Length: 206
Image 1 (tube, helix red, strand yellow):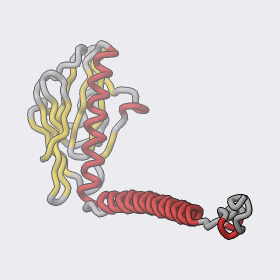
Image 2: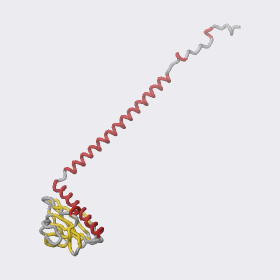
Image 3: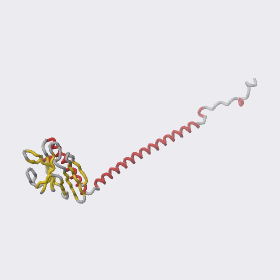
Image 4: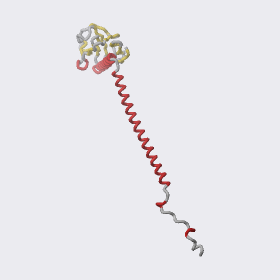
C-alpha cells in the first residue's frame, strides 16, 4: 500500500511533447544543406567564368591571326598569290595534256604566260576561257631556266605576251619535256615554281 500511495514527485516525469523537444539535429542538417548549396553555386560560377575566358581567348587568337596575315608586306603577299596561281594553272595544263591525249605547253615570258596545245602539226592556243593569257602584275619580274627558248610572236602564240618566251611542254602522259624553274621576284622577295621530269610541280623559296 505504501508503494501505491507514494507521492507524485517520486514517480517518473512525463516526456515533453514533440514540439517541446530540442531541435539540435535539424539545425545541424540545415547548415549542411546551406553549405552544400553554396559550394555548388561557387563551382557553377567558376565553370561559367572558365567558359567565358575560353571564348575570349579564342576571339583574341582569331584577331591575332588576322593581324599576322594583314601585316605581311604588300610585295610578299602579291608575289605568293601570283606564284600559287601560276603553279595551279601549270598543274591544270599537265592534266589537260593527259585528258586530251595531246602535248600541252606553258609559254612563259617577261610580260605573262599562256597555254598551247599541239595539234594539226603545230602549236595552237588553248581555250582562252580556261587557259587564256595571264599578265604578271606590275613589279613582278619572271625568269625561266631549263625550258626551251624561242623568240616571241611565233606560230600559234599570242603576240604581245613577251618579247622572248620559254615553253614548258607536258606530253600526253603528263611527263615534262625537261626540268624547268620559273622564278618570280618582287623587290627583295622571290619564289620559284619548279617542274620535274615526272610532271611534279612545286612551289619553293626563290
